[in-house]
Length: 126
Image (tube, rainbow, N blue to C red; front, side):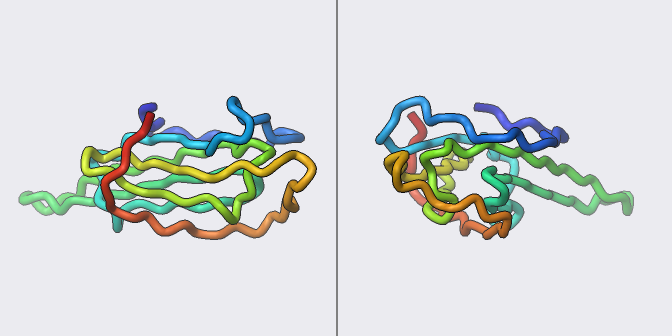
């Protein structure tokens, strides 16, 4: 899945969508190959995972070139936002994962957000 550079998905639907494969881990991949790990931010808030990146380069002529993006990904209803984690593959894929919980054990929809550390490691997105 390619990132939506310069795109911001707005609005919050009334409910979160069901996961495509119940009881299997939820996984999303975002291509961030032109960003360093320290230039990326991943956080959960209001039933979404928000991925953002910002890269600035100083030009020889004295100007600055800036590249940034923000992508919001809706979490399935069966995913507890507290369990979401992210890893960065050597190929520049940001892999966001979380286990699913049975529907009868769903967690609250609190509006407080939390930042997720990005780990650099061998990881694949299938």
